[in-house]
Image (cartoon, rainbow, N blue to C red; front, side, top):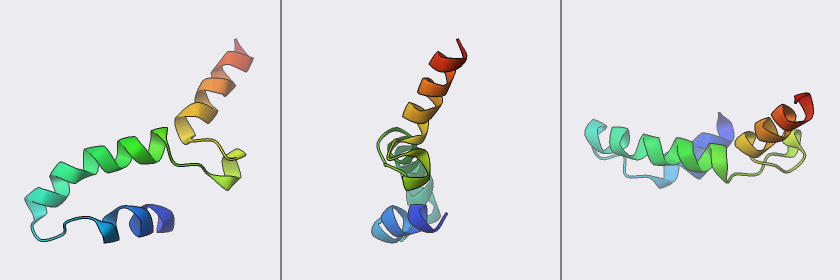
Amino acid sequence: MKTFKRDYVWLGDLSKVERVREQLVGWFEDYNENALHKALKLKSPRQYRRELQIRAG
């Protein structure tokens, strides 16, 4: 959560609730698809899950 707030929320347009809601979809998409995580061996959450599913076959 700390990383999400630092990298997305605090850099976003927080002027109106509606604007925050519009941005959330893109923030979550980028965080899950592109943001690398040390705990996931420098993979994005989706990349990590895809690789787990492939291994589980």
